[in-house]
Image (tube, rainbow, N blue to C red; front, side):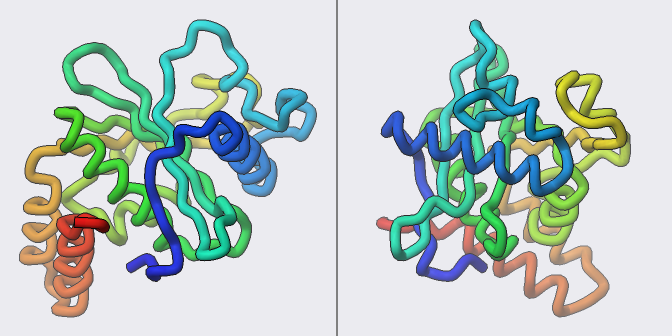
Length: 203
């Protein structure tokens, strides 16, 4: 589970959100998803610069020294409690478990806001994290989607996988996946993840 030195939560300050967009841009360059010239003048992903897009709710993970090291977003998709949980990106050298801290902050935010369903498209490294830690909570489709079909600026060969997860019963389903595991260590891992998500920092 993420170490205590990382603090995760909603970003509201415009300067912090701009820094989150730059972190995403750098991460996508590092992952080989975009050519450098595709970023905006601010260093953002090109689709962040589109007019008329649905407003995003930004989340960030900060180190003990206050440095922003990982980000993600939630974007409302219609008025029936469906949100796109997307944009997960980390600074180089950030442990993958920090992504879980972001998802926990997003999960509790969704509970508070009465959101019903997460939908997302995830790149293979994020898919691996979700399948390892959030089995049952988030279901990743084996279908492969060319990312360029969603965002023309993305380089050829980059693929994503559709995924979704109901907010209600999220941790119950993770524990159920643990119960179904053949390996005791796998069960213990998933039970630990469920307990981590049930625990709300500051309460």
